[in-house]
Image 1 (tube, rainbow, N blue to C red):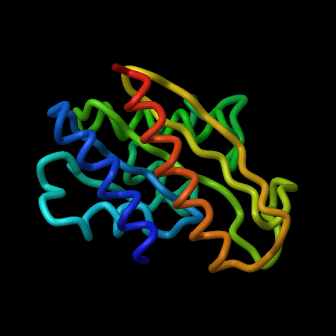
Image 2 (image 1 turned 90 degrees about the horizontal axis):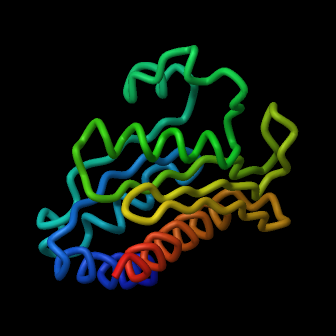
Image 3 (image 1 turned 60 degrees about the vertical axis):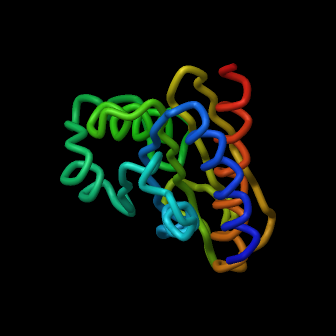
Length: 162
């Protein structure tokens, strides 16, 4: 986890210097994003909290996303990642939110996405979403790649916000 902790320390220092806060919603990453963020001493200055939303049941229960909000949106998509980012940001009252959703492997998901598919979204003063395709089914390796890509996207957005 040293690489993730180093990335988290970098984005954490940036958030701390701007006196900004962060909430996280993750799925296929299984908590690696939050774990890397809270592994950094002083994380409580910017990290408010996070959830692992692994299923629609969890999204409905933990994020309180009602069924009508999901109309026309499928899981493991950029709109779904953005919905979760915006929802957790609002729920926790943070400056920023980071959301990840996908299929870590070894097989794809029921929506037709291949293993190694992840959608990541940042909600805040800058909003952006991306889709990552690793091209392999190594579950653990994909989880680490999803977390790295998420932290990288967050840092880009925070830097871009000025």
